[in-house]
Image (cartoon, rainbow, N blue to C red; front, side, top):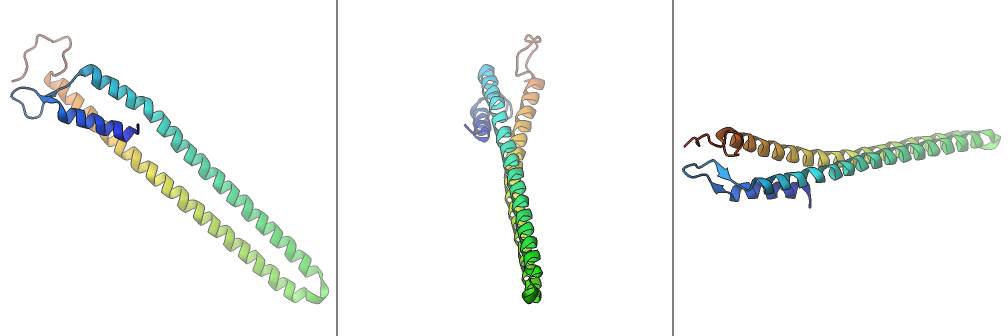
Length: 165
């Protein structure tokens, strides 16, 4: 299950929990169940982080492949240019053709770099959005847990302490 679905499930569990008598904002839920669900969520997050690392690795691989291809095209263009220039009868046309090939190769290399940058930017933006939502949900859950702890919803060492209502 997707970590965002797990977070939504936790929010729904909290929303569906019974209210503490005479309180509109405080609620009760099964502590063991909540801890189990949070542990499940924690276990899933590393897989999402691994997916993000895989996206970054893929980006690096694509960028490297694009650079190698661009360098190969430039080398071939320069070699072709040098070959054409060496022929006396077509020296002028060879220089023009070689320049055109080099310009075309550089243009193609630039286009490939831009495509790779767009792909990587989109992938990173999607991952950033996912992490932002996940962190916001986690922060809300922690805030709620802290608030509950402050009002005495969790029973601990001070179990005999009267409730605040």
